[in-house]
Length: 63
Image 1: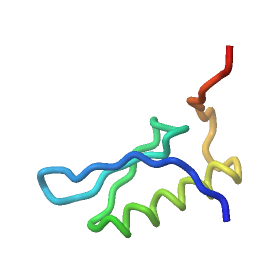
Image 2 (image 1 turned 135 degrees about the vertical axis):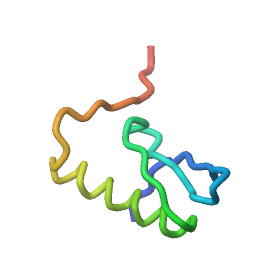
Image 3 (image 1 turned 90 degrees about the vertical axis):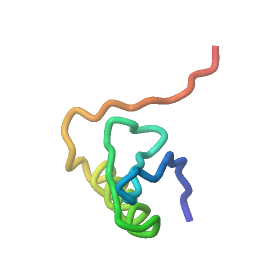
Image 4 (image 1 turned 180 degrees about the vertical axis):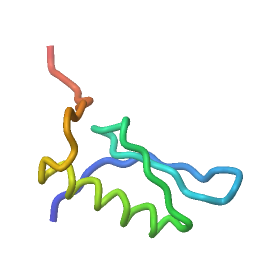
């Protein structure tokens, strides 16, 4: 099983909002934390299948 870093928070309206650590430009939301995580999994699949054009990746580099 692969793991990815995620960042998420709960908005004042009760929705959960988050993104993948490596792809902060692609925000998603869910009514529950579980919904949000499912939506994040969908983004991983779309990124892996090249369904999203011009993807900007954020990563750490050793110097």
